[in-house]
Every structure is written in structure tokens, then in C-alpha cells.
Image 1: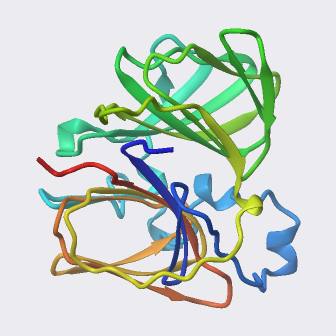
Image 2: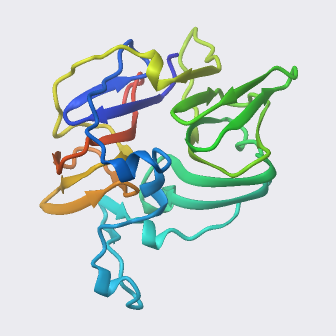
Length: 265
């Protein structure tokens, strides 16, 4: 897949890009309580906020600056998604803040069905909770469970449906054509990829959209340092200094977007 998308899963300083072979994992060391709950339950259940401030009007860890943003779960605002049925969504990253892509959470209910992206827009989805069914224009369907993903090229007819509760994270952006290449749909799961170790990066030209899936730690963005945890979303502008340290006894894992496979011009 030579899409402009490069979606990665990160564990500590190890990375995997879907455009390459490899995936990283490690023993989780998860507590008994965590194992009894859905894998990504903390995405919608923040625990980092101080208990005595949870009900304080106006309290949030969210931060927006011209070079980066931290969007924490307590500030997610859900509403109807255009052209989606029985689905609510929370837009987390959008061009209004300076990005060239869109990132949002979609909560599907009974008999939910997606709408299509705008013309010329490619889409990537990752399943956080429940199961969803994706169907193409010819009627071929596939079932996606937690940790499964799908990529849809621009103008590719498809639907995303669910007959029960489910949550997905969606990335969309306008496709940038590549000479002599036609993008193709892609479906997969993170457990289908072997381990791959790659060096860490701190300053580079790519934009990022990140969803912390598990764990907690400290994230450096520019001259600021933020405590972060599962459920936090981060937008990073090009060339902003960035660095992450995982803390605690559980593994850290996150999903990150960056533009790739194209010239910055």
C-alpha cells in the first residue's frame, strides 16, 4: 500500500508502519482488574484527572497550541456524524487546528451504518471496541474485531456497519496521487505482524495524529511536558520536538498517523 497514510503502533520506542513488514509487542503485565475489562476500556474512561477535580466545571487536561494539541477524554464532545446512521462521533483532530487530516472516534449502536468520505478522500479505521462489518460495492463483507484495521482508497464504495455497540477510530485525508500507482483497499489485524525494531525519532517533517491505547507516561511536545494516559489524543505539527517516556507497570501502546511516501512539496 503506497498511500500517503502511514499508521503505526508504538510500544515504548519501537515502531511498525503498515507500509512495511513488522509489528511490535511485549508481555503486558496487566493487572487482574484490567484483564477483566475490554482491552481499550480506558480510551473512554480517563483516570488521570485528580479525583477532587473531576466534577469541577471547566477542568480539563486538554491543551491547544499552534504547534501541538493534547485532547483528553473528558473534553470529547459527541454528536451525530454526517451521513452516518445510529452513530455518534467526536472530532479530535481537524484542519481547523492546523492539520491536513481528520481524526475522530465513532460510536456505533444497533443497526449503525457509515457514510462515505468526501470525494477524493482516503479513510483508515481501527476497531477499539466490539465488532464491525465492512462491505464493498460488490457485496463482499468482512468482520473486523478489536485490533483489526481497514484502509479504503479515495472514492472506494464501502460501508461500515454494526448490529451491537462498537467504537472505531477513523482517519481521513485528501489523497495525494502517486504516478503509476493505484491504491488498493487493505484489511488486517495487528496480531498478523512480526516484531520490528526501529530507532526513535524526535524532530522530522511529518505531521502526527496519535491515540494512546494503553499505559501512561510523559510526552514532550516543543518546550512542554505532559502527563498522558490511555485515551489521550495528540496532534503534532511538522518539526516540533517530540519525545515519549512510558511510565508505570503496564505496557504502553499507541496508534499514530504520519504522512509518508510523498514529497513534502
